[in-house]
Image (cartoon, rainbow, N blue to C red; front, side, top):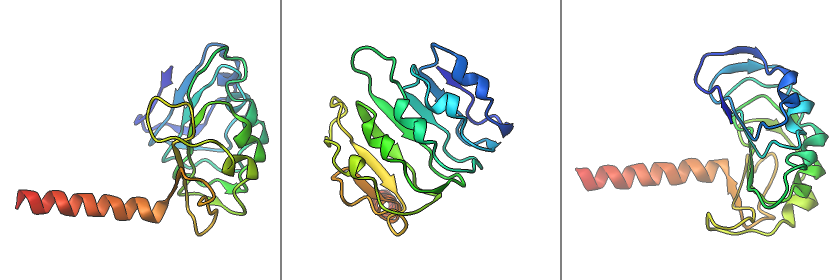
Length: 173
């Protein structure tokens, strides 16, 4: 695992990270990373989790994302967190071909178009013990994910958070 989150890092994600044959998890949350998501990293056969939430990454989601974790033998939950960047374009059909993908978090970007059929047809589950898709978060006004039971529209997330905080404040008052 490589976790470089909350370090005020600036610049591109080095593409050489994709050459690390044992890199299973990569987290770089809340930095100021720019540029594209390196194809060598996102398509790494050993990578099962990527979380680059809250950066300034640009470009599109590489189609080669479908290769994520392809060299892992056995079952391994896979997660993709690309929330709050500047990604644009459509969601690649290959996302839905990633085995044991449990979380896809894409809201807070400039993605648009239809949710790929392959993602809509993924089996869903609600417990942490399942290998099925549990969370699919998008900006539903741009990319509607309601074709899946795992869908969480970003507006709904904020509304649920506000409700929880209001209820918590009412209990303490």
